[in-house]
Length: 205
Image (cartoon, rainbow, N blue to C red; front, side):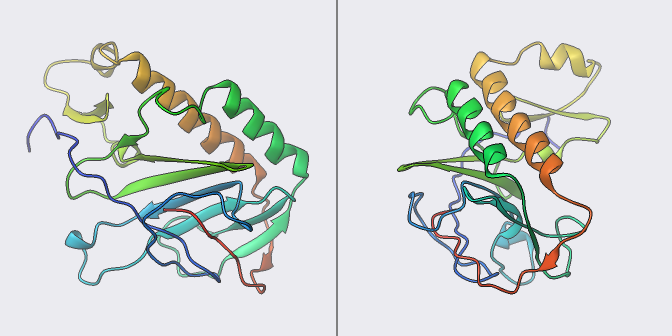
């Protein structure tokens, strides 16, 4: 295994209508779009059958929350519940303060060749931004670290020594990413109702 994976490929996908997914090449703030949605994209080159991205969780401005129980790869049906709408607007406001919606403020695509990755899409008003990264694939692996979008094998260096080489834009990207991840995870209740009403997920992935 090489000690470096160069980031060279951009893969765009989309979640479509209903509780299913279809490919979409763009990122637009269309009516009915969730304010926050997280999906996991599986590179079809590594799978016996091509498949669309998997929805992990999506939240709408009115507080509707839809998620996949048991995590990525689960075959369970999507569940839904409602949270306070102020929680959604508060997170979007905080992300705006972190410059998440400012074009060119920091890099938003950190994906290696032939890799699975996670997509976070944010919609606020008529603005839409998509964050894509593969770094979660390396978390929890003792001898690997991801810095500046590149996977490194720790060869005689500690994780802290490798992370010390992180650029400001990588650190800002991680800050936004972790804020979304940790906040949205805290919204998901222990139980929910089956996702019986079609989910209009226009715009993502």
